[in-house]
Image 1: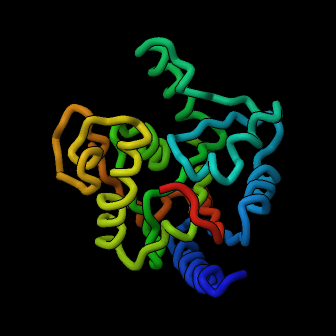
Image 2: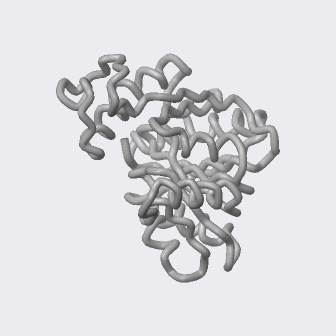
Image 3: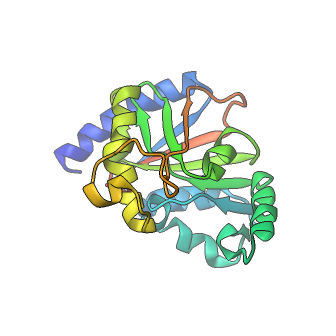
Length: 211
């Protein structure tokens, strides 16, 4: 590993100890391939699997891997109407495994997430039997204010480009603290512990993943 990756490993190991104190599990991997294999080994054949919008779980190869036919996939993007979207979301809430990333995670083990519609953080907070979070070394921050700033300055502007949203940050590259119709920052959630021990599992990867 490079010096940068070794430094991330040390920081991740510190964070994992703090996650354990908060009822969450943490794991470190040197690369995406080993991370994906560990997740696939964890999820039993026939399990129902859903996911939130995330570039990280695409870039690491997890989304391709779950299409093997081993799992029952609940894909809300296939909805053809608002009502169908609601029904798929309801099924997602009862999934065995919910896959996502996090906008930021502190060294103390706190997760910071900001959503537009709230489907992702709703499933993080309650519902699915297990939540699997893939986090690259770019997601680790020192504290909650740093995490909030990271979302506003880096993640949200990049996501508005990905989603072609007509927001101030789409045009300027920085947060305008907007209330525009296309705003993707409707809900802010800080997860400081898991009420069900071991339900939330964070997989750290020594690579830059997502936004």
